[in-house]
Length: 343
Image (cartoon, rainbow, N blue to C red; front, top):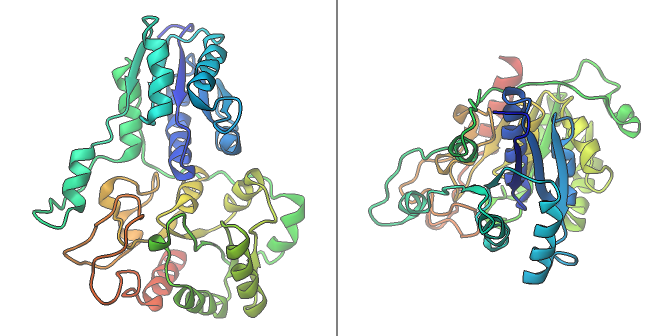
């Protein structure tokens, strides 16, 4: 491709999905250094793309400047100034379809993600379920660039590169000998969250083993829970509400391991090359949302004929009296973490 190639990439949410796009664009940029990328997403997600060569970040303001069809046309006019040669729609929602259609009407080359909706429906339905691994979401992202004529080969390998620890977090890393474990125990949907009392048991056991624990992700309610745990268990630190996203990524990059739900915590760890032990309930890694470079063998989940019954975790488990999350023993999680850190 010539040096004049410039792709506008559209992916506005959710947090974990945007982090996965960043993992793909890191590989794409390295393999296509002459291609310019304009990443269009929410301002809050800009730190995911820091350090990617030849990338310009353009924020969408969906609640103000870019609200409604008039706002989307305003965004289109802003993006036209970049003089793009192609549009990669990695979202396929109403907003991204509107923007990409504006460009397509001018004759610009545009490709859109194939989300594999029929296969996902077959994977999650109760009757005649087709239980098989589907194409990974990161490969679906890469397919869009391939369809635009670019070469990109994803390594699916973690690339750890510790960043400078933020000054206000240096005191949390004073013990150089202790293994550092991040814990991202919350998620956008309640059905993807491991029960609080069982997660506390996991934290208690990990603390007893001498690990340094760092709790990430959440709002005011989650922050209160994390602070309670931090006070109750030695070497356990609440980071919720104390650091911005750039600082959190830098801290995560210095950890040995992350424990996460099927949530953005897993994808943030992938972005900075940290292995993840992940816990899955009504969702399943077969749907294609396992963190980039992570191993299926590090997924904690139960085998049940109704699983998975949800792609995004917005539906309750159908496993019976107890949910599939409740059926996971805290010791199973602790033992997997010990195996990863001591192996």
